[in-house]
Length: 210
Image (cartoon, rainbow, N blue to C red; front, top):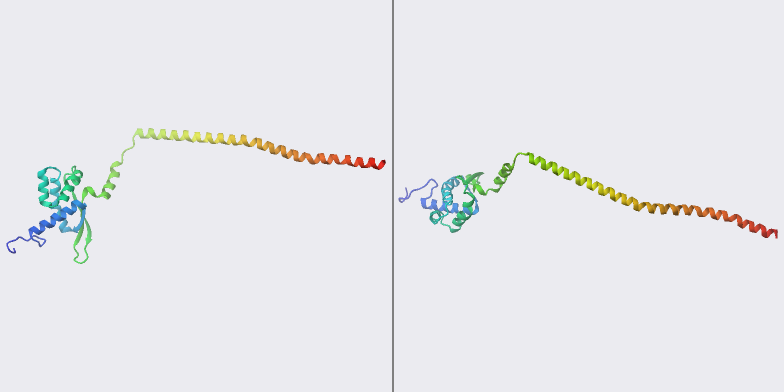
């Protein structure tokens, strides 16, 4: 006892302790997560969870009661407008304490206290587990229909490629025939020239006889 005031286990007077917890509660509601010592986090949990339960009833009386504990308009507004919507289905246990080790200097146990419904990592891991369902016969029918459609598309693609190849062959055949005719003509021309040469020799012999 000092000057007639009670001292709590943290070494501070009761009014200072209330002011500290109200500030921490406001920071937790606004930021959804704060870092502090384990002793303060446990005290904060007992202080803030009844306020979260009170926020489920959005009335003027409950707002005034919560404001008397928090003394912060912004935190009261976010508590009733944003946080209360996420914790409506939760019967309790709105906060979680995660230990992070000891602090350098005084070796105090440090932790993170956060709102359970705002941890995106843990919520993201739990959702896929709930989404797993058993396979039904309907799903098998759909898969068979999909495979049949894929086979039909593959057959159509093969037919289209065959038609294109046939068209290419038809276009190429006239060109090949024309090339063959040109080659045959080129081979026939030298034979005609050789046949004409003996006639020239006959003319020379006639001139010599005259």
